[in-house]
Amino acid sequence: LRLKVPGGRPFRPADPAFDLTEFVVREVARTGWAVHARLIIAASAEEVISRINPAVGTVEPIAPDRSVLVTGGDSLEVVAVWIGMLGLDFTVESPPELRDHLEILAKRYAAAITPPE
View 1 (cartoon, rainbow, N blue to C red):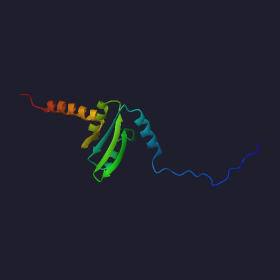
View 2 (spheres, rainbow, N blue to C red):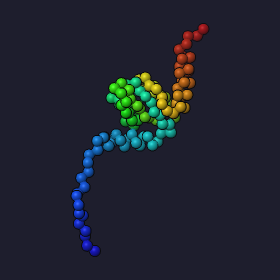
View 3 (cartoon, helix red, strand yellow):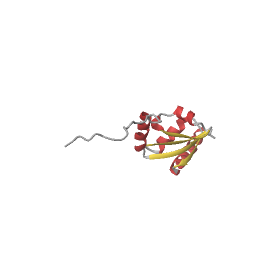
View 4 (spheres, one colour):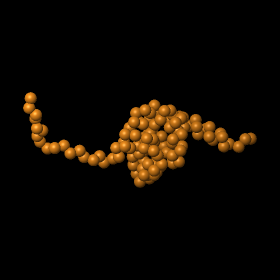
């Protein structure tokens, strides 16, 4: 046997254009979600990012004052709580079951603030 000396250009790894720790945390969290949601948020991506933990989801800008949040959780209830805690206006793109769940919650909350007759 003879040792073969590698030829050609040496490999030089490039630094990624993103935070590797944040990427791993986000991807590990995402694989465990039972419910996946896509939301349009009425705020800049920077504003949304400042309000969430990287494990909560990913944020993409779509306009100076609008962004997309892709998030999820163990259940519709968990996703609804996280969205409510965000403190920003939003529209649910998917899943339709989340829209249905939020409608039930909206009626429940509206009934809770209706004065008794």
